[in-house]
Image (cartoon, rainbow, N blue to C red; front, side):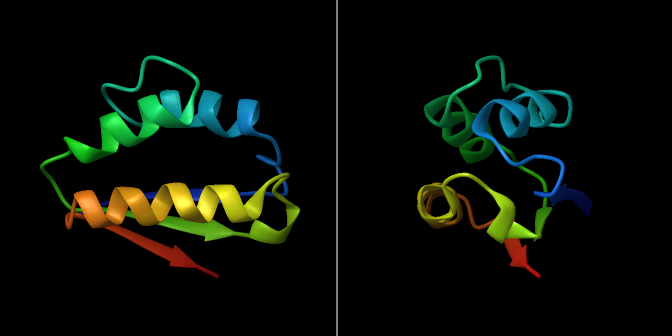
Amino acid sequence: MKQIILDFKKLNTKDLLLSFLKTKITGLYSSNYDALIDALTFIKNDLTIKLINLDYYEDKKELIEIFKIITNENKMIKIIIS
């Protein structure tokens, strides 16, 4: 199982987050939430994404909604908030 750890002390903006995720997720070619949803919807292997220090993110509420959409569309994706 692959795991991606997102530390929002370092990835506190949308641009920083999506730039980082482009290096970790195959098929993520654009820096926007729609592209993230599309890329993660089609992953066929188990993936855990661990969110650390989420309170530092510029729009925590929007990001949580994005991850809810992703996990509803793809049951292979697991989100852990710590």
